[in-house]
Image (cartoon, rainbow, N blue to C red; front, side, top):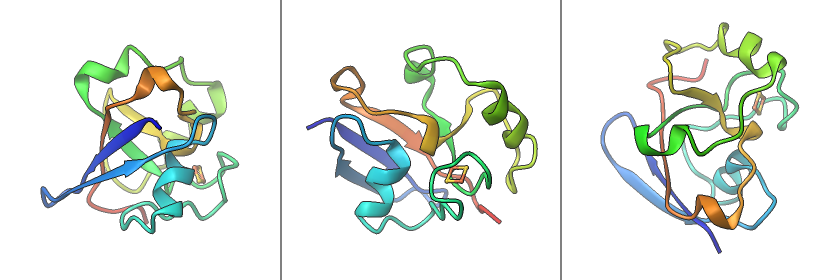
Length: 107
Ligand code: FES
């Protein structure tokens, strides 16, 4: 199972196992991870699943769609060049070891 490391804004880390085909958001919420709200349930409508992708991983993710791009502009925390919506990151075996940083707030 691919593993994902989430780094909280305070520096704590959580290592979780994801299933192939689920999103990083789904893996996080299935494990009860604090810091991902996912209010819209993964429909790219809320931006409360905002994450910062660790530098080495950003280029390995599929390009973002226009709706994700637009929604990130309204995220509660600052948008940066490595911002993504975790509900739009589909986990594959190639993403084993993915590192995602959590923003200070989601709302
Ligand atoms: S869960 Fe709502 S945009 Fe990702």
